[in-house]
Amino acid sequence: MPTDEEAMHAMHESFRTAWSRGDSAAAAAMWTEDGVRVGAAGDVQHGRKEIAAALDALLNGRFKGAAVKFEHGAVRMLGPELALYQGPMEIVPPGGAPPIRGYYIDVMKRVAAGKWLILESHPKLFPPPPPAK
Image 1: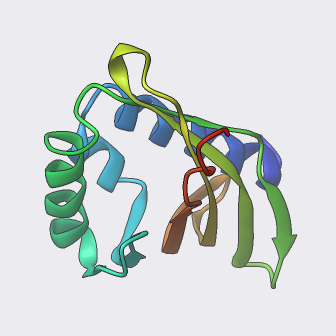
Image 2 (image 1 turned 180 degrees about the vertical axis):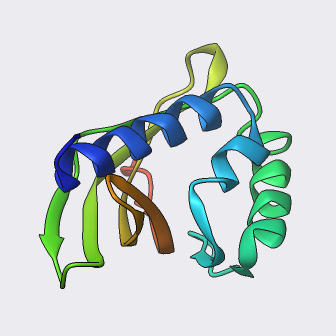
């Protein structure tokens, strides 16, 4: 059985794969049924259905065809059933546009032995760098 940290890394890798192929339903399945997502623009979704709809709008709108990259997040256990998982991310738009960098903070919940899901997520995007002079 994987360690808690390995299970969280694997879950985020599954999310990355789903997001990068534009599969909003599979990406939303990484949240608990009562999960919350606070998007980079301040939008808030409650529950998988709302989260899937928001991800669908992103993945078929602004980020259509984009891929997301994560570094392995840092894990901070808050108790036996809760943890913080956080780290840098990068959204790579199609067509060679510059990547969009950001950071995510996820509150993780153990839902079964060796299985963790996102209870609450706060992805943030950094503003683009100023133009070169």
